[in-house]
Length: 92
Image (cartoon, rainbow, N blue to C red; front, side):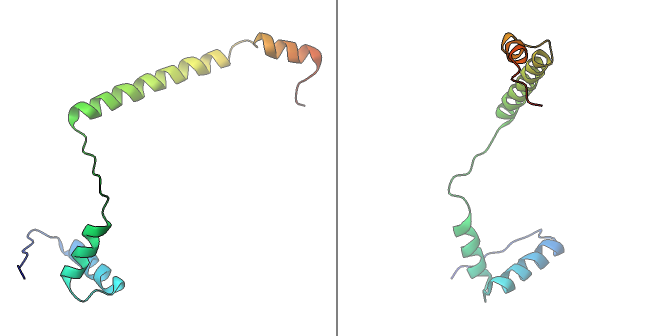
């Protein structure tokens, strides 16, 4: 069986991995690694800088639209609200 060498692992991470190995009942690191690899999502999505910029622009646009809609809802009552109020259909 081939040997796997892992460098630059912090002591804290190594402690967490040891605890995980013990809690899950694995005798070897290979068993733990196999289980971790099998349990990872099959599809991994990687976003680039361009994608992140598009997302930021979209979120900013949505928030601006949300403010506009909220401002319109805070305005005077609509015709339907006025009609309901005149007919006594208000809650309360």
